[in-house]
Amino acid sequence: MGSEVAQVLEAADFAARKHRWQRRKDPEETPYINHPIGVARILTREAGITDIVVLQAALLHDTVEDTNTTLDEVELHFGAQVRHLVEEVTDDKTLPKLERKRLQVEQAPNSSLGAKLVKLADKLYNLRDLNRSTPKDKNIYFGGVQCFMCLG
Image (tube, rainbow, N blue to C red):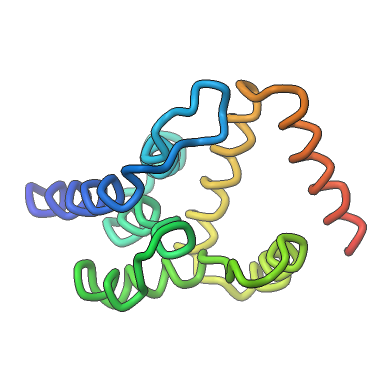
């Protein structure tokens, strides 16, 4: 058990260092690390997930997408399984946002269970976070969702 806790804490520390200068887009501009920690918390507390690889991937899920972290770096520190899950939930930021969202839906049925869990917890955290957002931010978010739903 101690080893598993250490593995999760290593992922949290790594993510905190990678996201150290980032802030959430909420009114308080909270430290970004609160988001991956919140995603991991949803998985453990609400979904009962204890799989260390899934929890590490939850903590690291935005490092490749939103920082200068590479997938090779994730694998070096956390192994091939964590790398694979992080890769599955990482969007290609070179694509337009609407295309990234379309690909998320298209690829979801073929994603691993771990990737689905991380992505769902991520979406749930973001939806809950909207409660603290300004009406303008909510309109931007839901405007994108409505536009995305038109693709289906």
